[in-house]
Amino acid sequence: MSLNGKVALVTGSTSGIGLGIARALAAEGADILLNGFGDPGQIEALRQEIAAASGVRVGYSGADISRPDEVAGMVRQAAEELGGPDILVNNAGIQFVASIADFPAGQWDRVIAINLSGAFHAMKAAIPGMQARGWGRIINVASAHGLVASTQKAAYVAAKHGIVGLTKVAALELANSGITANAICPGWVLTPLVQKQLDDRAAREGKSLQQITHELLTEKQPMAKFSTPESIGALAVFLCSEAAATMTGAPISIDGGWVSQ
Ligand code: NAD
Image (cartoon, rainbow, N blue to C red; front, side, top):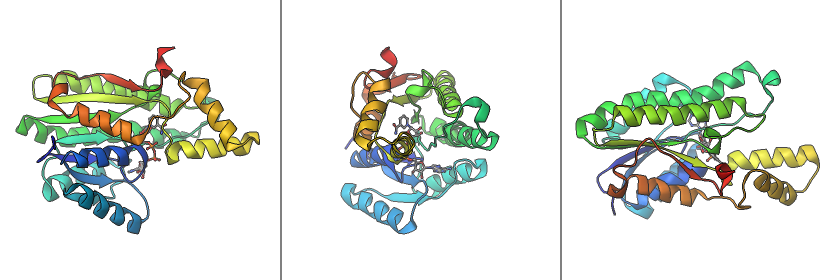
């Protein structure tokens, strides 16, 4: 297990991609601080399940990533309960779909707060400890929408382009500190976030879920296939490895060819 003795904080890890990353890092021996919303009983069951499956310590923070004070408290909690954090995965994210003229200002603020500013506040809180230890891995979960745009997703596309830029700044500032910062840019991954978009669109257009799924995949991705939370988790493990020690500032696509077009 390559990550024995390391502590990973994964935001938005009660579901989807974050959960896939948390499981993969735990399987490599990292202790984990989970974060995200959900039913307390289910989160506790998840915490116990990951701890038992991988023999690591697993904690939980219910911090709301849209609140800077709670984000700083979450990083402190990781340090006090588990140590580190040596690995910070900024993954928590939401979506809101509307054209710019119709986009509610409050939804803009909320998407930017969670998908972009939360990552800044977590990095600000976690970097001094990583510098003191001389090792760190920052992994920001961006998106194909960090590199190219789609209609109806102004706040999401702006936040994801922003997080790719933030990742590059961190890579430059931390270049000779033993800390790397990279951005994973997935295409479509079937998670509750995407399931909601599929359900909404199927209802709106009166088509079957199967038809809508095929349309959604093929209008953007040459590969008509979802990436999985497990594959994103495996990529995160690679970014934490010694082999990736000089990989930094990179937006890494795992998107079925989406941004090759
Ligand atoms: P998801 O809805 O399954 O999971 C989102 C997680 O974030 C959950 O654990 C949720 O509780 C948490 N979260 C939401 N708001 C929060 C807040 N204010 N504070 C703390 N936690 C909060 O979504 P997902 O598809 O797994 O998305 C995870 C990340 O991957 C997001 O940043 C998303 O933009 C990105 N992404 C997803 C896809 C995809 O196709 N699913 C593609 C590219 C990028």
